[in-house]
Image (tube, rainbow, N blue to C red):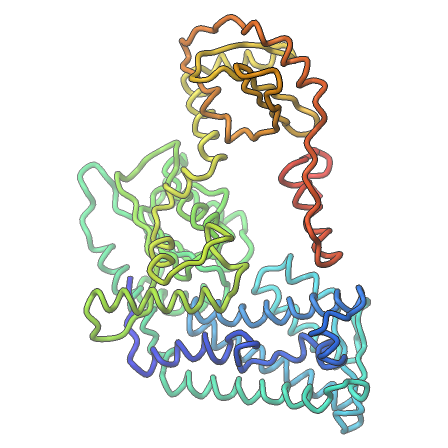
Length: 531
C-alpha cells in the first residue's frame, strides 16, 4: 500500500532520515552528546589514533553504541508513524532539558562547573529492553537524578575536566534547537493530524471489510502489527472512531480476559467461537504463540527489518493445522509522492526505504549480513513471500517433515524411544560416503567419502548440509553396510574434534560476544541455554 506525501512532506521525509538523524560522520545534525560524554572528555587524536586503553576503548564503544541506538530509534519511529515519532521527539526534548538543568544545578548556575551522570546500566539495557521500554527508562532515570537519586552503577563526569567542554554544552543545546525545529515542521506540514499513512490504512481496511467472502470461506478478519506501543496507541484513537467495538487492541500486558477474547474471535480451532471483532491491532507481543487464522490479512504498519519477525507475524495466520483461506495477504506500507505514475511511485518508495536502511546501518541489514542492497533489490526483498523465507529456514523445513511423519506414522515416533543408543544403517545414494552422528551436549556430524583413497578427508559438517542425504521414504529398504564401513568408522571415533581457527579480535567485548555465539550456535549444552 502506497501512502502519498505532498512534495513538501516527501522532502521533509528525506531530510529527517538523511540529514537530521543521518550518520554523524556524514554531517548528521543530531549530536546526542548526553549519550557519549567520553568523546568530549578525551583528546580526539587519541581515539582516532587507536591509543585508548582497554577500559577507555570499552567506554568509547559502549557509549557510541548507545548514541547510535538512540539515533536509529528515532528513524525507526519516524518510519513507523508520524504520531509515534512526534511523541518520541517530545520525550527526547524533555530528557535533554532535564539533563541540562541537572548540569546547571550541580554547577550552581555555571554549566562548566557542573556534573553529568551516565547510568552504566543503561548501556547494557539497550540490548535487552524494547525500544518503548528504553524511552520509559530514560525518562524515569532523568527524573531521579534531578531529585538526587543516583543509580547504583553510575559514572560521574566533571564538565570542567572535559577537553571539549564548550562543545559538549553547545551540542546539548543544539539538539534542543533541532527538536523544536522538527516539532514546528511536523505541525506546519500537518503530518500528525492529517496523516496520509493512516488515511491509506483506513481506506484499504474499509475496502477489505466490504468484500464478499469467497465461496466456502468466512469473512476475512484483519491483523495490524506495529513494533511500537506508541504507534498502536496512536492508531487506536483513529481506528476506534471508524470501527468502534469491532476493533480489539493489544497495547500492553496480556490479561486472561484479553487472551480469551483473542482466541474466541481469531483462532479457527478454538472450541467456543465468537464474532465480536473484525480487526486486531497489536504490537509484536502476540507475534508468537497465538493461532489467529480467522484473519486472512496481515498489515505490517511498520516494516520489520528482521526476516524472522516477518515470518512470526505471518505465521499467526499461516497455520499448518488448519487452513481457513486459500490465499493469505501481507501488506507493507511505502511512502511515495502525489501524482506520480506507478513506475515512478515504486522508484520513490524503494529509494525512501533504501535511505532508512542506510541510516540504520550494517546491523540492520536484512536477510544477509554481507549484502550490499540496491534500492530496488531491497524493495523486492521486503516484499518477498514469507513462505519462501520460511522454506529458507532449515528449522522450518525439518519441523514440517517431523510433523508429517508424526501425523502419518505416530507409532514410529513412539518406537524411537525404545531404540538402542547406537544404530548403524545404510541406504541408497549417489555417492559412497559415511556419515556419523554423535551427541555430546550438542550434535556432531562427521563425513568422509570413502570410495576414494586411504587419505580421504574426514570433516565436520552440519545437519542442514546432510539432511537431503539421509531422508528416505517409509517403505525404503536398508542396504548392507559397505566393506569399508568399520575401518572408517574406527577412524572417525578417533578423529579429534575440529577446532575453529582464532579470529582477529578488536575488543574484549567482541571476544565475549563471539564466545557466547559459539555456545548458542555450536555447543548448545542444555544447562547453559536458558542463561
